[in-house]
Image (tube, rainbow over all chains, first blue to last red; front, top):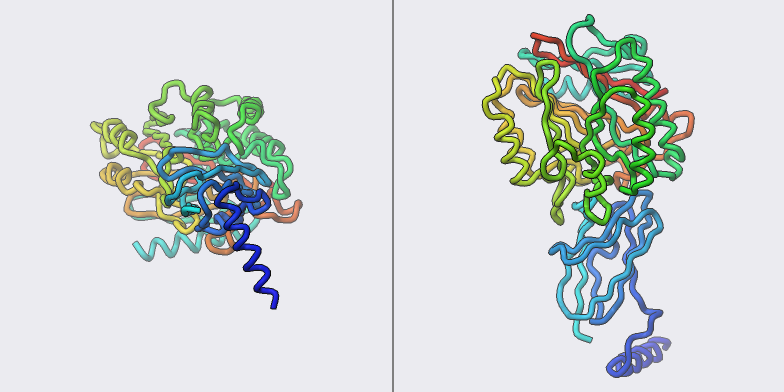
Length: 109
Length: 311
């Protein structure tokens, strides 16, 4: 079975993670496509950097629902990254198209 | 009323299907009536020389450079050429927002340089694409904010009518639609107070002031409060942009109308995965772009609205 080695790898990564920052290759991405954030809810461990990529022919942005931060306007193909150091629920939306909403759930690592 | 709504929709559909045609929209006490015009008739005012005529353009998106239109500056120039070729020049032009695509200074500069070719005054309201600079609208207000309040709302009188430019693209809320806000609504109440109910009112704003298709954000979440303030007036015309296509309806004495873009079309509500730019063959593009002419007759309630395409 191939599952076992994968589990072992994950387990060792998790154990290593207690002492070291996570590998950058695992950086999660939210794609903006057809006026939707995908995935709409993303769960990550504290300290993760998330990157949004605009795949639409229309500009968008990433604005905290509590307005504590706001990305610059993101033209087609543009990226925006932000690190979430503390556990919690972070709701955001697109300030150009406010019906577009998303959520980052940051959990204790 | 349901019957009137049916007429509106049928008229609008015919208008969109018949390339080269315009729709004259007449609004009066007996309810609306739509009449199809030939392209030649649509290009000039339907009535005599008296009264006021003005033109609405919208969504020029200067700075956009994707397949749906690689050169929106050229199509804006085509709209301006069409306005300049009118037998009687309009008193002014209303631009209902999304002047630029990304709120950049170079885009505003280019748009202003092109619009100067009109030779008549232009009254602006911002679209959401115009307020995405670092100062969330500061760049727009530096250029167009003189004589306005708040995020750029204002009013003026012309031809016996009262014109109100509203801003519904700033301070938007997560999960919401366009938004006017309490400060602007309080200003509107004061602005309308004391005006006779017989005075025609023309309201212009970027996003539709009616719930056109909330699934795509096409509406304004506190527009009902504004419409309540307008309810006592006998003739109210609401001109919007944002959706890059003609939609219209009437509710009581209020006629709602959205204008085509001068840059690129967008899909009809619900016909695509999202409301992004609609790519069409290059030879069809200008038949899906256009401008809106409005004529107001002195001492007569109806306003005639005529849409023409750029082709």
